[in-house]
Length: 218
Image 1 (cartoon, one colour):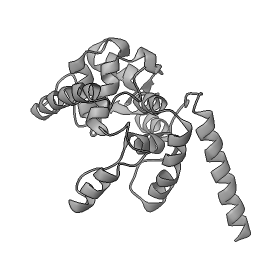
Image 2 (cartoon, one colour):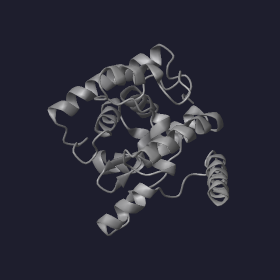
Image 3 (cartoon, one colour):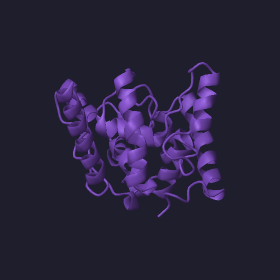
């Protein structure tokens, strides 16, 4: 029992150090990138780009699509969680902060251990990192297509442009495919992706106008 407790304390200390480290140092690779590269038998397409070199509308688009209350919560959107419970768990309530923690430090899947670790780490990341840093890391490690990770690689892959030159429509399409990047295309959008993109364009404009983008705007 004592050994398990010591192991748990060591792991907790290690994770805390990594949270502090990644406040300034960019994560070199994630478990998902590594496992996808192993599955494909080749390195994934990924390059890091700072938030200052991402089109501001891209930042607003992903917030509008995934977590409109990003600037007002502390890692968990309680209103969204209550709505998900009321709907029987058929809708997602995971915030961008939770998704970032999962992608950087943990693994994919829905088992209780991962969810427990995610719940413990998310408030720590929120306390240590800025909101802009959370969004920067998220956009750099999210998967946008098979073997394509990060907004810089996605912008080149789908549109042949750099991340800073993404248009509102392109940004919205990238945000629209994030829940299912292997089943949706930003460059050859389905009717659903087109409709969802229009909603995201509107949502991005709304959060800019009402101040819900203030916490991550440079």
